[in-house]
Image (tube, rainbow, N blue to C red):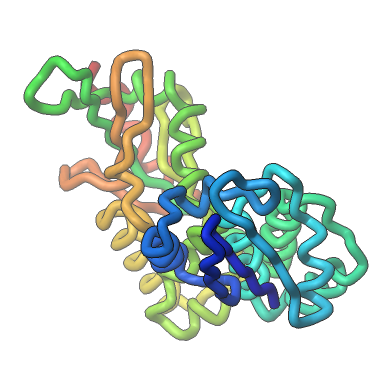
Length: 281
């Protein structure tokens, strides 16, 4: 699709086909004496390396048009990754859009991939769960448990943090929910976010499916979502600090208390009322 040639200031060159493992690429660059991370190396006019992109297909040639002077080597890798991993159900339309230069920026490309993937899964299934938060205020040896009011006050920051965890270079969360073949075949997109329910911030997981699940598939999907929540989500969302005025906030979609639940929208009423007014600062 797209190939890259990176040349350092002494003329030593490295060639890779994109997408590639970004961490291995970074390591290879360091061995060449280029210590800037791929996310900091500009595609044009970089001060430590010359970057040359070439295409080995019509798709790749047109895809290169989405890059601007501010885009980086990591951006080029993410674009190639997003297109190469697009679901088969949208691939023909996506390639036609690329060939006809429908995307002026990488952001337009990413948005359309998500919108087309979501549209290919017209059956929406939503799960809810409690959120818990712990605050590192820099003054205590242990983290402080925070309550629902605190989490709601920082909803925007939490939403941005979870969105960053699901950025295009991270891949779709649906890739982690593939143990049941029936679920994997029907699930087009899975998105973790949050929702304010009468002053209580809940975790929300939206699943977009090509068709309804069987009872067995439903049970397996619920179990796999629960596993993701308990494992920290993706590559470790709950371990990444979210900056607040009071300190670093760590948010999890899981806890070990008896009050924990993972339920569908239809089941939500029976879980909300008994647990309003949770404690914490």
